[in-house]
Image (tube, rainbow, N blue to C red; front, side, top):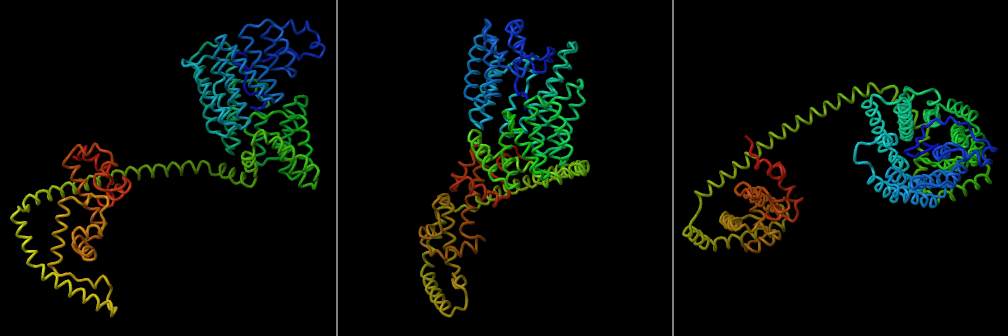
Length: 603
């Protein structure tokens, strides 16, 4: 909303002022102001062009704490913020207003003032401070069912998000606010006509804010749809001819590429409301934009200058003053008017220091790129219904495929769990029948000692053979190493002891470390593992570790309660990420799924 943004909860902007505009003679006549009640003066402060004279009159009256909070709020919001643009002074006066609002125990005004302060910071692109005051404002929101006045102004805190460019959050807040008003109308069957009128005017303004956000997102079909909803509200023709509605229609025409239509509407509006400074400002802005897009740079520059004569603060995402400076610079550049270009360039950089507008400026440039908008609009209009059907079919197929995939994966997981647990049961039974006593071990040791001399001779022979083969380069180094069966059995026996002692759980184990501890050549050890374990050294160690932790989980239920990181450390892995990857590689399922299946065994 440009013409007005936040109004007192207890004096809605939707109030129709029946009094005629006060003439200069009336203003000069003190008696003519004294005849107004404080309530009348407050309404005129918001509605009349020369609001300061009415606000000054309020200050002369004997005021309660409640009316003092209103007085300082009007000066802070309407005068210093919107007219003078003295942000610091505006914030100071709003804080004074809150001092009296707190004394009067009026938390509605208190919360609303915090909302305005947040908006003032947002306009300056001070996001951190703005969000802080929004957070403070939410603390004072009614925890009970919202009253009528709160419903009228529901969603207005989202204006701050709109200034930041969070259009989706702004739209969502206003749609909820409209729904709350509809629910209120539905629940209250006997509302007086004037309250119903105020509610519909409130819905009109909330819808206008939604349209503005859709336009800034280039969602032109959505914007058109909401404009139609506004037109269908039970309001008079006059109520449906507000500046916000007309402005959105002009903006929509420009974004659709209907530049002549936009120019016609803006000129008609400019002629009809030529005495309204705000209308002149925005109508001239859109005329400057439309003529610039038509490459009529001279006329565009003229309307830039006309708009800047009536410039007013922009309370939305677009800073229209800065956009006008940009337009004027572009027009002057195209016309070869160097002096005008330098003039507006200096003004742009001077004003931009207070707003940090560069990121938004880049976005706005894309927004008005006609080459991007036209094809997008064509696709939306021509193929929208077809796309909805196709999208529905695709979503249905994707969901069906997803659930089928989940079902198949679930069955595969159950099968793998059963295979793994069965393998460990068979291994456990086998170990019971193949367990050797100490006498058997002594016999094996004696056998190894008897064959040691034969193994040594064989090793020397193999080394000589290896040297000869390397010299002739007839075969690869790997094939050059040939172990006698006795030597392989010796290494396998040592590996069995290594496995029984669970030395593979050491995180520092490596091929060289294991070879040294077994007193075996590392090449012989590597080849033996490849030949008999059907994997390399790393695969061998990883398999032992995974088998170890699976056995622990299947035989000791407490392991099912441990974290994955602990299980990884328990079986020798340096990180749970590596453990999870290896576990999936060896079993085909993740550790977490394995645990969940063990906790709830498949039937």
